Image (cartoon, rainbow, N blue to C red; front, side, top):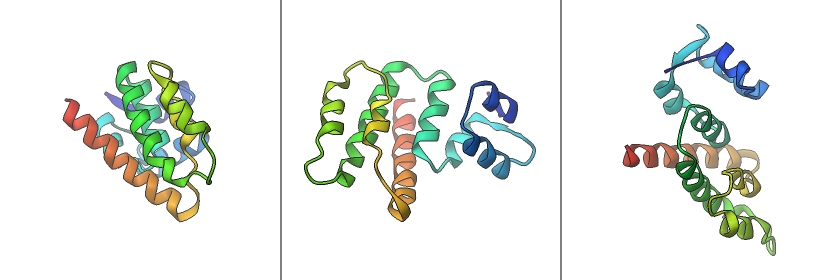
Length: 126
């Protein structure tokens, strides 16, 4: 599958993601696998996987892994994300966003680490 700027816009990718895609791929197109390998934001990677046909159960599994990983960034006493992860079951993978609370430099590093984790999980599942 080829990802293009127009495909991203048609599927309502956020403006920042489209702008970053155009920076990385000035031609405005790239192979899906290359985009997956180069993304450095876990939320964008999860969005891409969802919009390119990753099964729902796999999305939930990946989201729970990411959400669990981000729990270390919660403020002391904050339990809502943990409860959401536990209750997620077959619910939407958006629980990932509830627990994604990483900021600043830690935010960027954690996103890169989550992307590597997601890619590793995808390879193991294939």
